[in-house]
Length: 398
Image 1 (cartoon, rainbow, N blue to C red):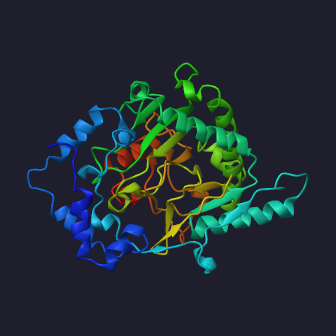
Image 2 (cartoon, rainbow, N blue to C red):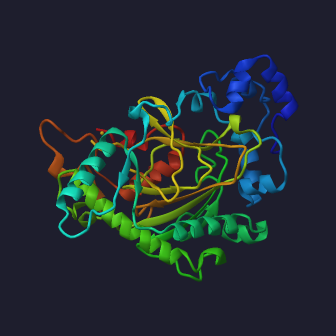
């Protein structure tokens, strides 16, 4: 069985029976009715060999970008997202209700002299955002726009190089310091996502310039220094928001590991049938995320998907007292979309350090909800599970 799916004419024929609902589905405005997606799944022949299709695709080492280069007009079946992965209502964040607008926190002036009042305001804002959303945007963070723009230019440059150049870095060995592939969980997740990913290990054992793809050699080290400095600042704010000493999260090892992860989402010919990233919560201590101006990122808040509109130069932070928020990325006719995520974690690297609920925050009224574990055990479970729409934390709940 090859990498094929239903064509535009076949999908159009199925869609005509749904009338206006089909047009709403194609626009991405009405996700409650997933009848057309269910029909597509019902149409998959019984002899369809998903594993064979996945292997054939992965063996090309070309990723989703390779499908775009080939000029596909229909997505392979392996990318079909099950109906229950899409069937949740969307609320646009531009709506007037302030309860559904992601918090934006201005970091300007928090370290100027003895401006303790300004810092306290920001700490209170971080506490509220982390408790209610688990996701917030920061501005005036100190990373210049030209640095951000240059990183996206390098992501584009690498992703649009000839396949022969990209494939030199294609691997499923996640212990390597440079990893390029399509979907880390390609063989575990119920559906593939429409994106390719390139990642670099920065700490504790940094990738060398010689190991980096040529497109990144003169920018990654400077960018990673900016990210690490911002990570220190954020860890201090989060520590204080928890009522702990400013250096608490740093001292227990939350900043020991850093991975830079760059996602490239080519334009999708059938975005209503798949996702750029399925629903998930990140598996690190916290994430600093930069998205370009295409958009498509959504956060699950009060059982509704909220669009996160891009803010030029703005960075997104994601981290039950402080929530680990579930989020996803929509596929889009427009593109490519690019994002740069910085994960503070040691991931699957060997470590004897054990983490659990912070003891200083526990009491009879606030008992631990999760058992202790190592970062490696948690990361291995997350990777094995894949982006299947469930929380990796549930596995460790007491």
